[in-house]
Image 1: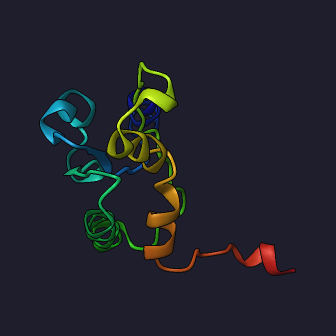
Image 2 (image 1 turned 30 degrees about the horizontal axis):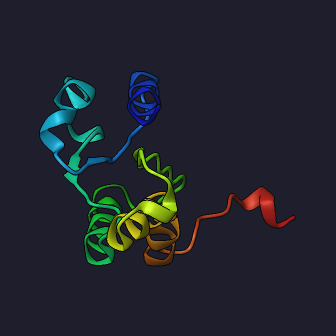
Length: 115
């Protein structure tokens, strides 16, 4: 779903910072979009990497208007049977948007929103 959203955003002429643990897997998504689509390496469970990615995004495009996180993975055992570290990662990965939101600049509200 994240790949499809990034592709749609870029195909409609918008800009997007596209991230993955391995940005080499994003070449098909960003191909042909030039500076409108930088691909960055990002492990969303690493707060320092999240802060770095936010800074790079704001450096490239200014303030972040929309933030989408579609990181996640399946864990095919009952939680009671899982290893503590693996279970923690299962919960940390999808909850990572707050890390990025906390690191970004305040949103730009359109002038009409304050009326």
